[in-house]
Length: 118
Figure 1 (cartoon, rainbow, N blue to C red):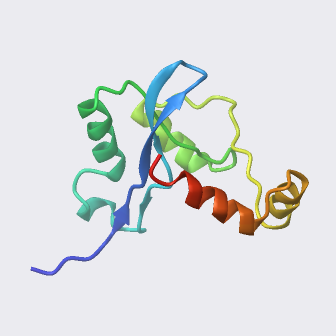
Figure 2: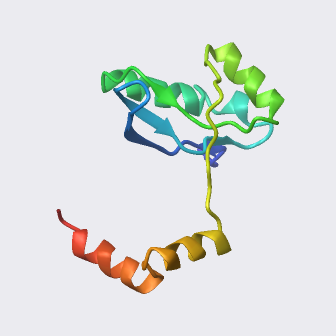
């Protein structure tokens, strides 16, 4: 039997401070175009099952405001799409903030190394 990867789901447990509940954050689900019908239960369904299995009551993910197709799809799943926005520091702005706070790539690694195993 041949297998091929047609998608993935990356999720992590978290805490929703707006709702004061434990949650799963679904970070970047992906199904290759045209592969949804061959992937069995969707990645989103599988993540939802795992959240329920862990007795979590919330599953959240981001969606771009201009992605009307995805927003329509998620609403059909029953998702509520609010006004929250994801803020990102990428590249130069990230490095600039790190410099301001006295955190550089070098001492950032040292901090990461010193907190392992805690």
